[in-house]
Length: 360
Image (spheres, rainbow, N blue to C red):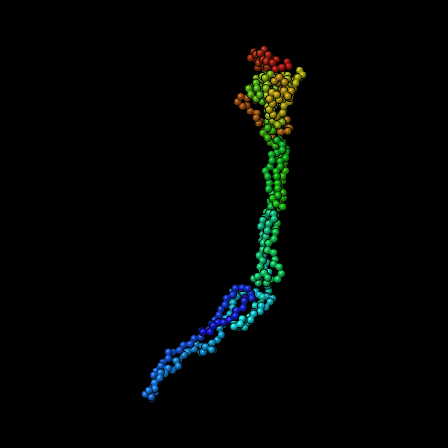
């Protein structure tokens, strides 16, 4: 059988290739020779005669067998352009089967896709795109390879970070409140939320006005509570307050002010010391520091500035509690005197007035 001898040049398209070689099958089939003894007419001369066997050649004769057919196929059809690749001649002892073929590249170019979305929706990021040469390898395409990655900046996802509102700057009435507003990025779309707003303070003490008075020791011992009003020595004695034993007091209310006097007639007839107290707690030392001397408070006025009130809770803290007596209105001296007279205790009560510097 003839051999399939050929020279396969390298693939000019750099792709995968397969070799398909068809070798013709040339075989010879001969019958077995039939031999016989042929002595002829001679009695002594005999010989074996073997006539030529009958043979069949599939290709007639081996010398006339056709040459093998060899073809080369690229698995991926290339797009070759511009240049013609010459196939080198076969090496010594090898034969080129069929005509020499050439491969030609045509229309090679860069295939560039669309840019991807930015890797972040707020701030600096990166975006990519697909880039390839349609001829397979980059060096077959003209020019430099287009960039496939670049920096990007996006603000569509940037938003404002808003903090909590602060407390109103005013405890009572109109004020301001603030909050932190920060853009989480280089730029935020839309309107910036407000960082300052008006407010109205409504602390519980805005509508309150009350004074609590203690005797014996600071904020301990006997205790009485009073609503706004004027309280003379007669009113205080009627309530059971020991004028010369006041050790401490507390004023409750943002718009509340207490003025205490040395004499029971608010120092109208007798000059004496007076002291004013706004919201807060005051012990014996505080009383002295503000001018209230000798633990002796014979009368006082508790006033609330109603024009400055931001609320309408006028009835707040105006109820009695166990152990306390809240006076919402100063007692009428005439009514008190008539009550004492009816009980026949005028003399003893008059002595009590003198102990509180009634000024009578």
